[in-house]
Length: 226
Image (tube, rainbow, N blue to C red; front, side, top):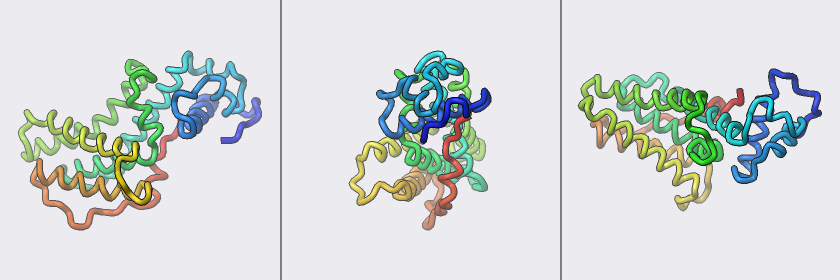
């Protein structure tokens, strides 16, 4: 992101500019090299500017992580839109989870770094809760339609989350010996794995031809600094 003149930001978009600059640094250098001074330099503002919106480095990172949870929730909802059977909707939510992680890997990893974000921050907690509600609601729909005992709904949610989070992490850390690392490859793998999960656990027949993601989907689910 090219630096802009210091007077190019008015009060309303300084926060967004700082978060966008943070995202650039995070993708390029990782979380360890992030400082207020470098974020301000990338945003084209004075080194004191971040203090207007973020009291600490942790506050800045937490705000960006909260944006990630908001975008993750949207990605899962968009993937599951129009899927009627809650078992297949659960698989779709899982595909959305892995797809977001593959396309926003640096932000995704930050979202779960307890040492760098404040899990008690109200905005972070709210965004986290909304994202998890997408999974919770589809699991409860499975229970309500008799596909599992309601007493086991919590365990199913944990199992489903563990599956897709583990798959996403394995892909991010390069555990798979693939010829390329295009996100479309992990999309296809996620579709197969989540279908096997719902078939084995919930008895939903595996689809022979899972729907393919539209190319524009990745652009629509990109995190938007707010």
